[in-house]
Image 1 (cartoon, rainbow, N blue to C red):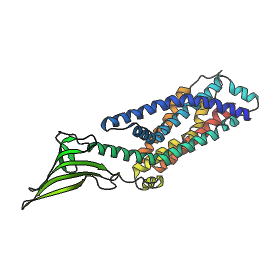
Image 2: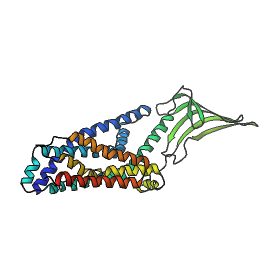
Image 3: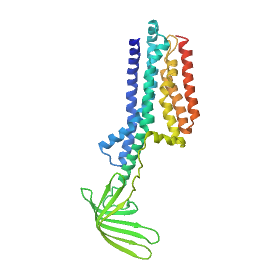
Image 4: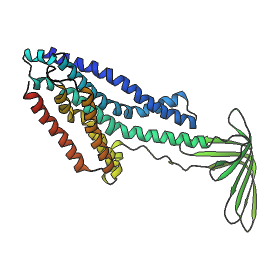
Length: 340
């Protein structure tokens, strides 16, 4: 029994890798294209690109594992059927039910992995990715170019004569036109943009300023003046996965996303019987239907999943899961246990 289990699992493992690796490469390229679009808007170093790609890995694996698993199961059973391997196993005393049970621990592990990726890691990586993008885009808006008009920092229009190699601006002019005759004008010999991770500031040094209202005009001289663009915690904080999903209780969109992730994560167990029943056959009386099986099972999984994401309906989630589970059991009994 041990050799038979190892043989079946080894056959499945080879088939899975042949499907998973190319699919992973294709999906990764799609996400890399998204990174290239972002890098065209903001400057990203090689380390930051790797960091961003790391944030995307849970989502990449979540998209590739279920479809790869469906294709690998269908191709494995089809191969064993066409090469009469099942008939040989039956002659050694193995029953169809025992052969199918050999795969169950592997499917449980895949389901657990998908649940970890989707329910636990997905919220964390999604929040970190969103914060990283916001920060880099915000930083891009602060790259003030010399001798260029129509640049802004906070509520001020900015003009800079030159910029040193160390990032210090020279001869800056900032103007803010308020309402009802109010305005602010600041002139500085030099200025520096800073980011402490919580807010952005523009420090002006050695300059003069002028503020006005309908009643008077005030002037000032300063050695150093700070202007802040973003308040603290503008990007929010990264909450735990539990806190992230707690919002699903009253937010239909968040609840729909959670149901989608859980339903797809359960697909290895829910669709196993359907795949086995349609690819477990005698080659003398039936031809290979692996491509059609992969297509139909993918539709049976992802169409309900997309509906769940849209509606956020828990009863629909229970009904769809129960329907697939019952269909798997009935098909195994009718198509396999009765004929082999």
